[in-house]
Amino acid sequence: MKCPNCGSYNKNTNIRCDFCGNELNSVNYDNFLNSDYSNIPTFKISGKKVGCFGNAILIFVLVPWFLVGLVFVLMSGSSIMSNNTKSKGMQETQGTLVDYSDCQYEGNVLMCNGVYEYVVDGVSYKGSPSIRGSKSALKETIIVKYNSNNPSEYVMDFGWGIFFVVGVIMMIFSLVLFISIRLIIKKHQKKFDENMESN
Image 1 (tube, rainbow, N blue to C red):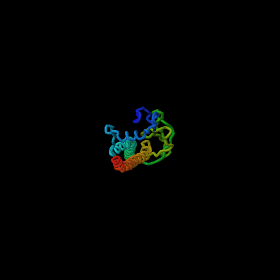
Image 2 (spheres, rainbow, N blue to C red; image 1 turned 90 degrees about the vertical axis):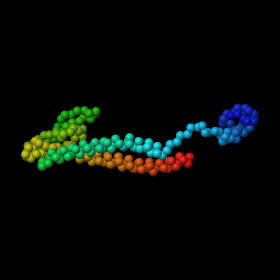
Image 3 (tube, one colour; image 1 turned 120 degrees about the vertical axis):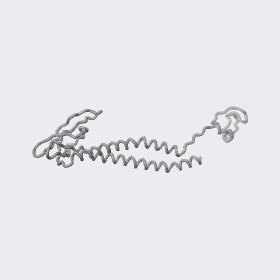
Image 4 (spheres, rainbow, N blue to C red; image 1 turned 30 degrees about the horizontal axis):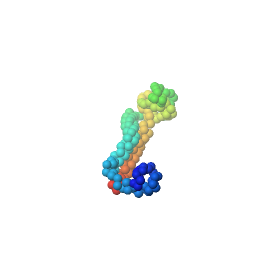
């Protein structure tokens, strides 16, 4: 900073000149007011862009949840319909987990078919559901539907109803959350634009 009185250079933080004692504050303020800021680049962002950015984050976070829920619904719904068709006219009993088969590791999880035993007219029969599950999560008992004319012909309920409900909940939760947050973002877009214009 150059003193206008004696021409000596001072630190920018000085209030008075170190050499002649002249006040420097007024010089700084005048220089600030008279400065040309027209060449300084400005950055403007609209509420619309903020909304698009918010939507992108929502989609990135919520779409995977929605898709997982959709897979659960489709798989479980298909299996439920297939089992209902196969088990039409069959009798129902309870099967008890007695063994495991076809066990394989998928990552760190041991996946197995549960072997269930069910009794019809004093005769024991064994069977497994059509899909493997985590060994530690297999049910101790399961509903078995069997052909009364041929009890070895069976359909076992793997519990697809639970998967179906979970899938529906995940889909609804994702949609409701997306719509709710989207409405909040839209509500604030106009305010954001108004603030930017006033500034």
